[in-house]
Image 1: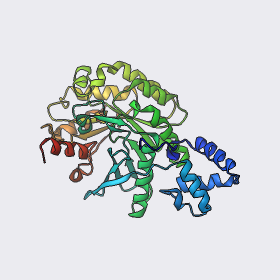
Image 2: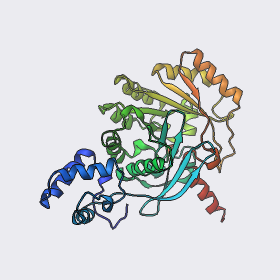
Image 3: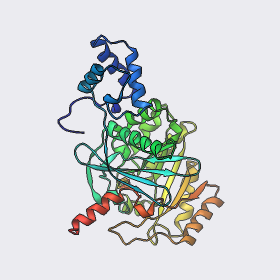
Image 4: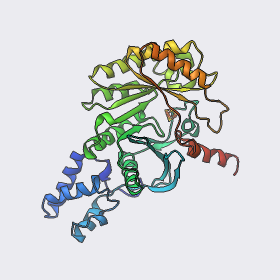
Length: 358
Ligand code: SF4
């Protein structure tokens, strides 16, 4: 967001707020109320990048809208396309901050991975974004803008429509709830993306999990677990010290109790770090307690750490232990390795190059 631009951002408003603000604006100009739904359709359906594209409105009304409001529209800085079809956008915000979003096509869905912060303050040791540090919170409009711009790109490049959204890009979404809550509402009731198709990923911000549980919509929750033991988890995720596993599991149980909500555990498998055989049954127990689906993800190497992914036979061992315990489990290969599509990787690479004076 530009510091000098004080116009309210239509993308950051919930559909209800947007209607109210536009109704007031149109009434003030003596314009009929149907103009509100015209603008609304341009925003949510036609994905207009500016008011000047709203060609069924009189030119003077487009100008008046542009004077009163803005529509956040990030500039694509880099677009990288992987051999597996994954597409990574690096977006430049008004103040020059760079954030990432990733489109991940599979046979039956197109998933968009969104960022919620520029950088991240959580400092998880296995994560390129954490290593890169925290720049600032994103606004609700900047989060929604990633969706709109990615959807426009997908439509223009025969990728079809976005079917699922995951908040798994840069940042900890539940540490930016002021923006993430309205953004969830906009995606769900503005763009009509089903709540069960939207997943918020967290490393364990307990108050945020409880807030999400209190919402009426059935958004999904993905918990970055990465260890079923507190001491080891604290080495990987500093937030564990503030919200230890027992407290975290209580919050996840509360979330799960709100009928029909999906909980996924993400478990990045790092060789000799968190893949000891003793950990598999402990992971299975935690997953069973909250009926979580478990994703086992072989570690994607990052620029500043010499950690390696777990060996395939160890990943298979974990999968078997979980499966035998009755836990639903899948092994996920990181997508877009050739374009550094893992969380925060492009930005981290840029920082490594900067530090090396390249
Ligand atoms: S894993 Fe998530 S919460 Fe942790 S540093 Fe990376 S982006 Fe932040």
